[in-house]
Image 1 (cartoon, rainbow, N blue to C red):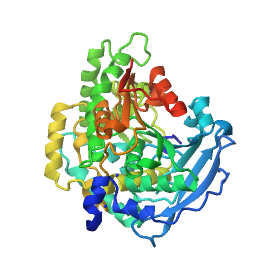
Image 2 (image 1 turned 180 degrees about the vertical axis):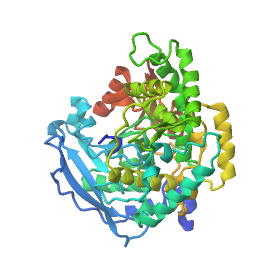
Image 3 (image 1 turned 90 degrees about the vertical axis):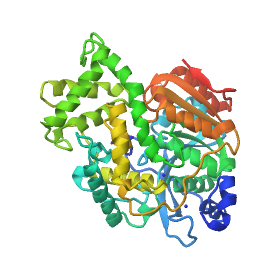
Image 4 (image 1 turned 135 degrees about the vertical axis):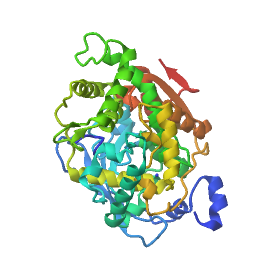
Length: 496
């Protein structure tokens, strides 16, 4: 199972004052709630884990606005500081997604942290609300709707969005029918509240955090709701925090993210000596891709064992999007392009168990659709898709199309959190220049929203996840130094 598989509401009486303070009525209610019980640590289940990793279960309210709300479980893990004499506190590893887990991260990417950081912190992971082994949700989606090219709203070859809206209604109906009460309480703000309950259960007055991808938005919302509970906050591969659009702006960001990143793939895919070379010149790779996608729109190739069981234009486009997350994935796209040129397909890609896919899809749906209301009008999406297809042909209109949120039956329970500069100046943003999923253009908007609270390190590198993954030594050293010592660049900086 990949890390990625394992691996978005206020009382009228306080509306004006809480908006000015950047908190919500729900988080104010939480502040008066009884403290959580201390965590009872025990041996973790599963294989391949660091023997030092311990696990526990935290109970939190399903509905923070209701004092009598049922409790749900949050699965938690930790590896204690490797040098108690140098221990500073706890470092919360906030996963991406929504639908990602950091439960195994203390044993995984946490061990990539330099010794000075592992000495300074207990490394804390968790499975966010709704995601197994925490109290889990499931929409019971049809098997075909679990295909990534279905979960992503790729328009029909002619640009029509009618089929996408049919899919959105079918999937939203399934979530309403099968998701239970919990799916109505999945949101970024509630995940941030869960993190604060975890902080309290750990006995920490403040926590540090390393949030990645969607986890940067969670970290930003936490830093807004609980600014004085934050110590050192690293946000890595950053989401646009636009409070009027939230996930709609993240989806739209793929347009620019692909444009930023595809030239890097094209240069790689045209290099002499590359066994997966697809063209003699970098300039030829883009038109080749567009021709192949158009041909597959007209003439799909059967692909037994895949979901869907054909290689069509949108499956190629989705493979392109997935492959641009990291240069290490470039061969997957190149091999598929080479096979499509010959009218064949490679072996069907592997997939996690369907139960895992169902769980991850349900968590993603709940968070994305509960965080902000999406338009329900087909005309809105059709106009946006037409504009996107004309300007950004590689993504064929998908980033402005209708997800299942267009048919979500539940209105948001609270307004999205607006990120501001209120609070201590203790945030470090690290961002690759070329990032298909969270492009630099969106990261700059989060940097602007934080104002004097943040400093940003822009890294001359390609791929999603900058720190200790697809960045460079300069960026890694800057982040490690901040976590270990608190030393942060005096101003925004560039790591060439």
